[in-house]
Image (tube, rainbow, N blue to C red):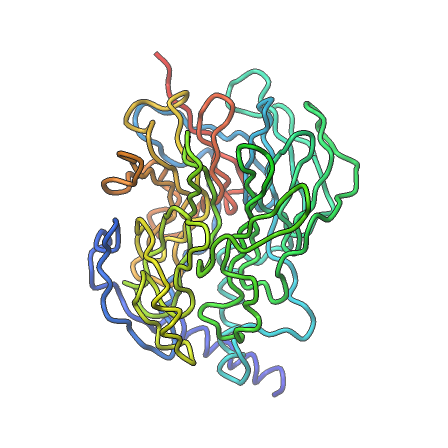
Length: 446
């Protein structure tokens, strides 16, 4: 096919993708909570596509927090900030990162003219939403020495990485989740730059990297690391061989370097957090796409050792996804349902438990979730940070909007929240990969 013909096909495919698809028929809250409504899947050749053009924050505009909080930009002019991590001395590390290049000869989503047109159109759309810029491949350090919510120090902490994402300090070693491996460097309290070459700890599944973000979290004892690895496809369309070791959380023993599957069937887990005062691991997961605006709810769940959560053969326990062939009724029978639905296609990425140090009572017991925002739902969902209250150790009630205003009145994305973390004073930090800022949301003290 010559270039003009390919261009014409791309224009046609993009128009078709933008025009086709379904609209939600259920209220958004129907897909929220411990027992979400799960209607019949909606089949279509072309998936629902409703995306928000990335425009950035005009002037001094910023997101909106509840009364009693102030919002400041801890840092601006970052390069696609995805994840934030607070060091013990209060310094904040920011992973400036984007997806790695696809290996030569690899394809995502099958072969043929329709697959090519869809991939090409989706690539155009990803560029529109600010998700196709080259990766900075670095970690930046921010230091707010005077406590005014704005960093006076902004320095390149570590470069030469491969689409870095999660970070975890264990003793005097900093572990980093690259797209293809866990690596580590030595760390000295207070340093603002590291010259050491990262040392590989263990390889991680890579390849096509349909989901490239690898988060890491150490256990309280500092003996093990938990690593998220998303799937290499939506529902296995790249072949199940490409999913070996993916859609999972791995447990890495730091003393021996050996790792094992801790839990799997989790399509794209990202945020990880320990429930305070317990050994209970929690995560947020992006569920599958392309079966309607009302399916499938993304979720927040505790993670059981050895558990299987259904992907790709089923969702929410025994709800079979007929697109996956051959069927595996034995795997479906093993699948357990997650704890709490966050709503369809909100794209939860960041997760952190709250802390009464920096939050009033109404926001002191629960989790904050950074919702990156939908592309496969009409109307849009997500594009905000929500708070999920906990009661008796479990999610209770409906999500509470905590940081909003990322979409403007025209539905354009001024920003998109990704990683969330608490700083040294208990204020909430939010990485914004479209606004290229890290926001700090702090309680107003009397």
